[in-house]
Amino acid sequence: MIARPVDRRFPDPGVAALYAATLFCIIASAVLWTRSAPIGLVSLAQLYASICESAPLVLNMSASEGARPKSIVTIVSQEDIGDGKMLTVQRVQYPPRAFTPKHVHGGVVQAYVTKGVLRSHVSGQEPGEFTVGGTFHETYGAIHYFVENPSATEWAELLAIQVHRRGEALTTFVD
Image: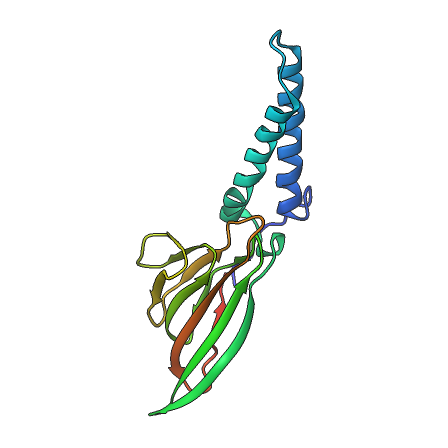
């Protein structure tokens, strides 16, 4: 585990981002208000919505995982396939804006997106965005840097099929 210095100015990075976005909007409003060309409330609301829509992507690179909702994992089935190995199928649901931080699995994983859109980055692969029917693979020991639901309103979901040794942890979060 890596020790990190604690910045006590903003205990929650999500709150810090909200403050920054709000401050930006106040400054932008003041600048636009002083210009001779009038600006409508609708376009200001669009500007604010645009900032808020992109904020979570920036947060993922530096924020703690506590700033966003987490995924909901349910084991659908678990079968002994011999030679000390198990086949586990999991349903993983992602509420709007959900984020799963860096982790590894105790076996090989094939993921199949069944609902919504998910962004994911696995070591040795390019980061990707996966829609319904999309798949990605995690080799044994690969670091899954993150998986997230970028939508502010829609749920996303995937099925994870994992072959692992009996007794091995399915998921281990790493620093």
